[in-house]
Length: 231
Ligand SMILES: [Zn+2]
Image (cartoon, rainbow, N blue to C red; front, side):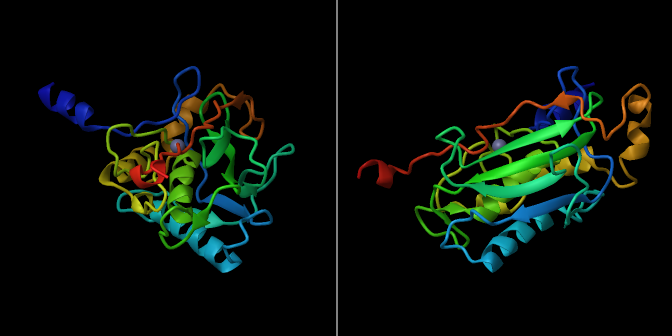
């Protein structure tokens, strides 16, 4: 019992859940990522954008003891929604403090069906850690963490899933041990579909989204540096 208690206390990652408390996860891998750079900031080349996205996808893919993998692709659309997309928004309609937002769709049993990541194109972005600009790869690594079912880790400020970031910060590009543990927990080797079957017994078709997961508009909070605040 003591060991179990210690182990639980050491877990800092969180998994998003349905209202009924069912953990969200994909049962079909790889998770596909479609990219639309039409409204991307002009200072980023298409090659830079795609390299940042690829780096973010690779961070979560092929981890030891995890079956999780993300790949570029055009997912099968359901209704009007793409099953997994990353795009930009000029004239940001989301929370003014957020650098990105994600909406996810899942069945009532917690099977993830789709997600839409939208990046705030009104902010300054970079792919090289420039001061005063948001790191695209780090932001995408964080948002893709949500896309695979993770919530925030509020206790480890070096974790990819820590809820806030600073301009110029590159920490979120590399998964912390806790982020990797989360991926192993949701996507163990051997596949998740078999493990989930008992919970799927009474659900509607996976292609029939019946549950709108809570929006996560505060995906990354802006936090001004001391230097910037004095100007
Ligand atoms: Zn977040």
